[in-house]
Image (cartoon, rainbow, N blue to C red; front, side, top):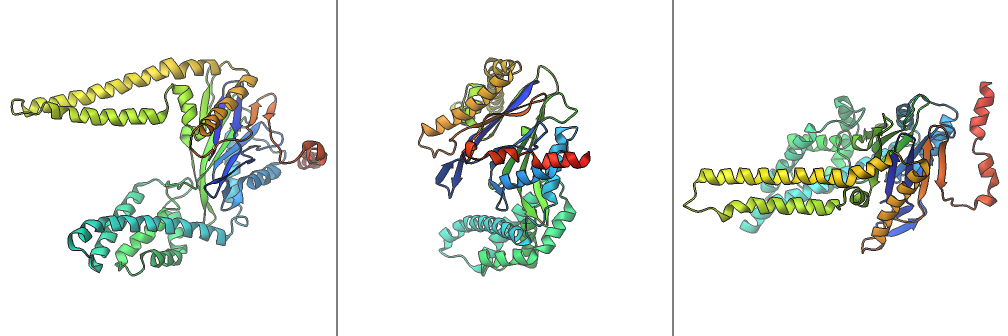
Length: 430
């Protein structure tokens, strides 16, 4: 896991990312690079969170390969940089081999089929408790029921970006043998009708073309300016894998924003967001969830206290309706209080913050999350040096804090060669 923050106002956007990376669920290293420049000359940066690679290819390698290809090319808008990066990933079948794609698909399908198997067993528990055994017919019926429910739910989901029914058909046809192999591994001797098996294969294909994303998703945050933009933008993608040489991704609209006016700002947290939300709202989101859940249960039980033969049923229904309305009103007012007394005062200050203070605030918010993890029994999944960059229209991407895995003073050629590809392209253009 990780903690990252983007803070944007009319003058700049500040990006901050920690350095922790978890390997094998327990081993943590505090030296990961998660913040990069996306162009050597344009004011554009990129952060990564979640999965550190795409089909085992490190994001650092993909980002720097794209940056090399981009060379001296610039675009009018940040949106074009983001789209070009996605197009670059789409057009790299040599990097994401057929074998790597098949391994990713097989892992996804196996995990999901095991989930279906578990739900089938849950369906059979009452029968087993009653009769002491379960026959083959009951197993088939329970499995068919679970598969139908999931297949219908998948069908209602929208397709991932740049995927459609045609993509679904291609994936289902190309990988039908793989789906059948996994079915036999998971469900073994369970008898499935041809119609149920077809629904199972539909599920396997839907997994890779619908907007249903696993915990292995990568977050890609691209921030900065296009040549014709006065204010910064932030574009975020969720990217999960590659199937049939097609990238499975979606634009994360909740974490995408464009500053459009001088008095506008935005604070966006990525990955572990709880401490940033606590700072902004004056209340930990987990506490708010507990409060909402408990209050709902409490108000649902209130009518039980007045139910009696002396009270009309219509009066009880009216009481239930009024109590729910009262609870909704409370949380509406509570939300207004959070906005007016906590979030809005901070945002009003952020609109006027100079570049150095934007950087300090971004670093402090990431550090706050790291400190919370350090002072609790939770695994320290946020920590290490914090990389901080500020991107502005006039100055481009400026590193405020940047770690290196090598001593800079011993590697002068690295810095001398940084602009080599760009300069060569400029000379050819002349």
